Length: 505
Image (cartoon, rainbow, N blue to C red; front, side, top):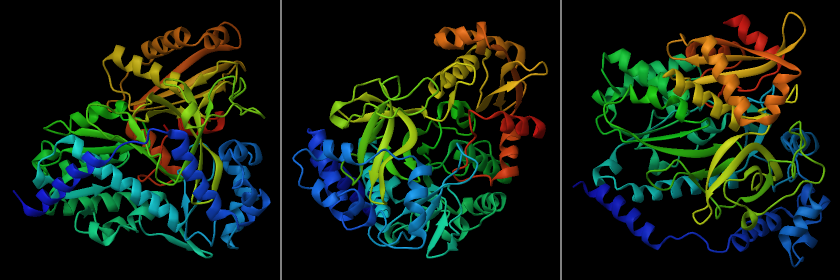
């Protein structure tokens, strides 16, 4: 048994024995909030909202919620974050060394999210907890000496004013700690190649020199990378190259629509771990086998709040109410959908990240991502959340016996000026029965959502389905953005974007 691998495995096993989850969620989260407020009390934001006096309040969480408003990106960027590009001590001490460019799935332009040294430490801390959780997966000791392939955005960051900027995966890979260099693949040189096709080609060329045990990245781009390696070297499966490959850490999008495609590329089943890592922070990860639930990182410097994604928090068009109900971690319920707010050591305060989540096991702080607040289709009163759209597409895929990797939908006007829902379904073959898919989608959504059923009887005159190869959708993405990294297909589109997609197809 290799000495280093045995040592690492023993350390992880011991850590698991002495590590337990906090049993007082409100107290634990209040400690995170108190540290954030006390650190930032001297900033412009802290002075404006009276952080010094907040720290004297008996009920810090409630006082914080009363005094500091909820921010979305546009408001926080316009009022505060934009100033940090030129001046220090705006929402966090000093100036951010980095700004993360988001994938921009729910807006036209990439967002610029500040990333401070303290925020980088959060990413490292949660990553270390994720690695420690591997003790629960009962892996052989020798696997801890092998390579980990992280497929993200280019690590070739661009200088802008006083900071560097790029996607968060590129920022993280450029800050890999020295002790991890020996395990990290593809290495900083290949990771810095900006062009997606060139970077994947370089990975495929170098792949025979690696012994990869784990891969991390968004499913769509990891799948394309694996296909490139298999085709380049004439393999049957990726295990012909990397026989020790055991783990896949997914994230960014739901993995289930990609599962069959992955199974076709491997000889042995992979253990799939989900991760909740965004430009704004690393929030959760799968911490035990036989589940895709993720454990919320409650002790790593981030304060969380939760808005019920129903009439208590949002109106019928999916817009946040002026005075929504807001819960802390001690008040949430299992299987209730919530919009997530975070306060972080990057100077995000009560920031609505745009994701919706559901807790599946409160004792373990386990949750799943259920959708996006902006992926809410309601032009004609259909009131369809991403969760219902995902469920309907999954049902269609099952009924057709096909795999649907990607989809997009928009309310558009037909030739007679009537509204319809235009769908684009992406599959490996591109030969789905569009007519049957249309009927199945319509029936599933009518059954799942009474508002959709009513809309179909009134203003929503029908639906249309276009079946294409998944690769065609990714090629369309490339016309406006780069492939790879954190780029994702927007599931709910405006009419103009949908027409752009249809024209490209």
